[in-house]
Length: 227
Image (cartoon, rainbow, N blue to C red):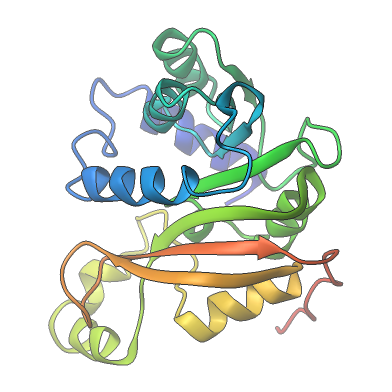
């Protein structure tokens, strides 16, 4: 997709009366993981001064949840239609339109935590996005993310039983992470993973990873492009 066609895709996606994330069967589990981890982070005893970014916030479901925990919350989302929905859902959050593959509209070290759920798999420039997360996150603080899980047994199951459906070229997933490849991306961007959990189904068929990674240094250079 070109940048324009990507934006058009997500504008159409979020203009539906009921976009797919609503009613996702893993939402309750992701909310439970998010609550447990974010409330354990340093500084959350003063939630009114703890700033969280929901990166790729969609229609604001998780923004509203985090705001309900008392945190100061910002959101960024590519689709203007989704931004309007999110603003209506949580009018006291700072929600802005923007691409996660561009420079984000926030100052260096603005946030105490970043939440990014089911987004990385849709991005071409994964390193650029993670490097921007590094830039706007305070040293030692946490990136919390989920992205679809791929492991050997699950991958073999997909190949045998559902390859065409899983890798349907009409779908928007363009990245498929195993634990080693996701860890490599995180470490290259200056993050060290400290928590790996599964979301949805049982291992080894998890639907997604839930990962907590600490910022422990600046982002490194982007990977060499392999043609």
